[in-house]
Image (cartoon, rainbow, N blue to C red; front, side, top):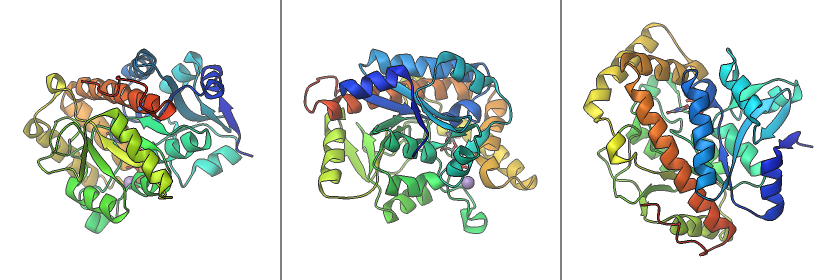
Length: 311
Ligand code: PSU
Ligand code: MN
């Protein structure tokens, strides 16, 4: 038995067949500083509700897999220090031992699927790190997208990653990478990574339709929807490049490895850009929450909404 614990709101949505959107918790504990982390988590949940779906933030609390958190649970998690970061490799051990931890994209996909949730919104996914040819640092998020049938809405991949290699690995794994409303693959803080995305779709209904068709074909795995940051919130790639280069060099010099790499880089980039990176990060997560809600609505009631077009 999976020690699943649905929040009352998530349980009611599930019983009514209402659309649900999963949200991850590593972005809260390891991706943003306090108190912006909890403020953003609340704002993202509100955005999902405004767009007509029900949010379910996912985390492991005292050995239970929580799908939907109360505000007290969310606040405690956001405040806590040294929270474990749980991915595919460690979520089962943490649950079995009664521990607490935040879920990455990979672990959140596993939990969402276990709870029957097909759509998940976040900021950025993990991927192939720069220098992976020597470090072998490739996020378990990529394999998860190939295994678990959840549509993940992100703003592309951060330039802390090697974006061309990340796209190559996703292609090898047979993961659909869908740019929303444009041809280019977006690069988190900027709307274009300067290279085309493998697929382009222009409405939430089409993205939901593609997910349904994958299921009909019996194809395992999910979809990655790459939703560009709103133009008003974009930071030009060359402005970010210096902070990323500095942070990456520091990580190498300090021998940061394994699951510490991504949080280390995110924190240093926040400091080096004096918080500018965070403002953009918050805007793009909200934008992704809206699109994910529209996709979930279409999956719950195909063709019902004109909300499919979010802009
Ligand atoms: N990228 C971001 N923000 C994040 C993360 C990645 O721009 O918060 C988090 C996500 O939870 C993601 C995880 O699943 O880091 C990837 O970690 P790793 O590279 O160790 O797999
Ligand atoms: Mn890694």
